[in-house]
Image (tube, rainbow, N blue to C red; front, top):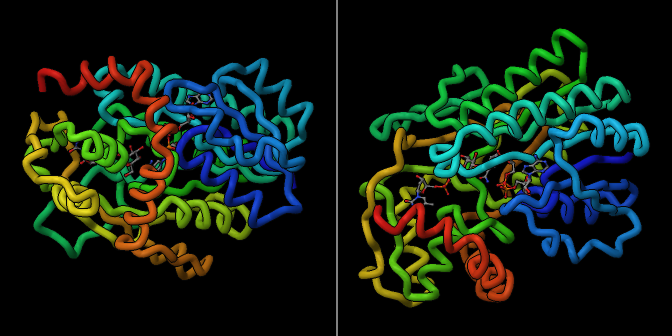
Length: 339
Ligand code: NAD
Ligand code: DAU
C-alpha cells in the first residue's frame, strides 16, 4: 500500500510516519509538508534513509503540484494531517486557517477523486463539537454531538469535515474522519501548553496560565492517536466519523503543577494571564464507537506518558533550542509580553 501523509513534518504527522514505518514495513510512505513555522524536516531524520519513505515539500493548496504528485505516485490512501493547528494564532489571523484547512482539504480530495484513491482520511479534532460545561462530568462528545465551534481554528476544521462528508455523499469519495482530543508527546511545537510549560520551566521563565487554569482537556499520548488512525484507515467503515480520546481529563493548572514538580521547580513561576478569547471550558471524548468497532483502547497511562514526554524534551534540548532561538521569540513576545 502507498500512503500519502500530509503535514508529515509536524507533531502528529512525524509520530504517525514513524509508527507506520515500524508497524507496516511492507507499505510505502510519502511524507508531504510545506514546512511552515510548525514543520521541521529534522523531525524525520530518523527515516530519511528508509527505502520505504520519501519526502516532498509541497503546499496542499497548490492544485497543480498536488495533481502532478498524485498522477506520479498513485496513492492508495491519503491521511491529511496538514493544517494550521494553533487556536491562539487563529484568533490573531484567521485567514490562513480557512485557506489551508478548508481549501487545502478540497484540493487533496479533488486529486483523490481524479486519481482513484481508495481511502481519504481526514484528521480532525474534538474542538468541532465546541465545549462542555465544567459542572457536568456526565456529559461527553459522541459522534452525534452537533458541530458547534468556538474559534476560527475549530470552525475551519469543522468546515473541512463538512466538505469531506459532502464529497463522500456527492462524489462517492471513500472517506473517514477522526476527531481526537488533545495530544501530547515528542516533537510538539512549543506554542502548545505542555512543551511550552516544559521549556519555560526548565529555563526558570514564568508559566503563563490562561484565566484561572480551570479549563479541562482530555489528554492522549500521541502514539495512541497514531494507532487509532492506523486502525481506521485499514478497518474503519467508509463514510464514518470516529472519536478518539482516552477518558483522561485534566485541568490546565494541574498539568502545569505536575510539570513543575517533575522538574523540581517552584510554583512561584506560575503567572495567571488574560484568558484566551472564547476559551472552551472542557473537552471530553466518548470513544465507545472506536473501541467497539475497531478494538482500539489507549495504551499509555497519563502518569507514564507525561514522564516519557518531559524526559524526551530534556534529552532533546537542541531540538527545542533551534526552535525557540528563531522566529519563535517574536511570536512569544507578541502573544505573551503585555498579556
Ligand atoms: P502541527 O501544527 O504540529 O503540524 C501541522 C503540519 O502541517 C506542519 O508540519 C505544517 O508545516 C504543515 N502544513 C501547514 N500548512 C500546510 C500546507 N498548506 N501544505 C502542506 N503542509 C502544511 O499540528 P499537529 O498538532 O501535528 O496536528 C496535525 C493535525 O491533527 C491537524 O490537522 C490538527 O487539526 C489535528 N489535531 C491535532 C490535535 C493536537 O492535540 N495536536 C488533536 C486533534 C487533531
Ligand atoms: O482538542 C484538540 C486540540 O488540542 C487540537 O485540535 C489543536 O490543534 C491543539 O492545539 C489543541 O488545542 P488547545 O487549544 O486545547 O491546546 P493548547 O495547547 O493551545 O492549550 C491547552 C489548554 O491550555 C487550553 O485550555 C489553553 C491553555 N493554555 C495554553 C497555552 C499555550 C494556557 O493556559 N497557557 C498557554 O500558554
